[in-house]
Image (cartoon, rainbow, N blue to C red; front, side, top):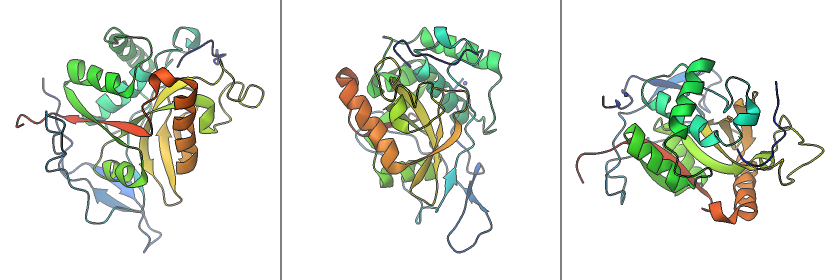
Amino acid sequence: MRGRFRWEVGAGLLAAIAAGAAIYVAVFSTSRPVTYVTPDLVPISLDLTSRGAYRPPAELPAHVSLPVPYTSQAPLGNWAQRQHTCEEASLLMVDLYLGGNHSGAPIDPRTADAGINRITAWKPAVDLTPAQVGQVAQKHMGWTYQILPADRPHMRQELALGLPLIIGVRTHGLGNPNYPGYYTHHEQAGWSVSHYLVVTGYGTSDDFILNDPGITRGHGYHITYDQLMHAIDDLDQAYPNLNAGRVFLVLAPASTVS
C-alpha cells in the first residue's frame, strides 16, 4: 500500500498440494455443501510458455473457497510503517498456503510480521509490478510464476485447481466501505492507493472472495467480478507505471523438465 494513507491506528523444497487437500464447494443440484478434492498440483514449466499438463476439472465447481491463511500488511497494528507491504503480505499468505498451511485462519501476528520483514528485504523497489512480485517469489521462495488474463474462466480454473491468485488493484476501487476515508475521500490520491491482495475463491453470484491485507477486516471479503475489474482498471489509470492490464499472478512449483 502506498501514499500518505490515513491508516487505522489502532520450505527444503516446497511441496506441491497433495491430492487429498480439500476445498469446499456448493453445487447447483443440492443445497448441501460437498467436499471437492483438488488434483495434484502440476508444476509450471520453467520456460513459462505453456501450462503443460495443467488441466481444469472436467466441470468447474459452482463455488470454491481455498483455506488460505490471512494476515493484514500491518499485523502488529503499525500501519504508519506498513503502508508499502501489501506485496509482502500477499506473498506470505500464498507461500504459506502452497507450503501446506490450509488453516484459513489468521496468522500469528509476530510470525506474520517477521515474514513480512523478511520479504521486504527481497524487494527490488517499493512498488512492484506483477512480474516483479513473481520474480521475488521465484528467486527467494522457490516458486515459479505465470501472469494470466483476469477473465472469469482463467480465474475460476486456477482457483478450482487449488491456486490462490495475486492481483494488483487500487484500494477504494474495490468498493469496500471499511477503507479509511471511503466516503469522504473516495478514490482521492493519498487515500485510494495502489495495492495487492489475494483472491481465495469464487461464489455462485459472479463474486470472488478476497484476502485483502489492506485493512484489518479484509479476511473473506466478497466482491463482484465487475467491481474487481474496476479496481484493476482504476490502478492502471492512476498508476501508469504499474499498468499491467487485467491480469493476475499465480505461483506454483517449478518443473525440472523444460
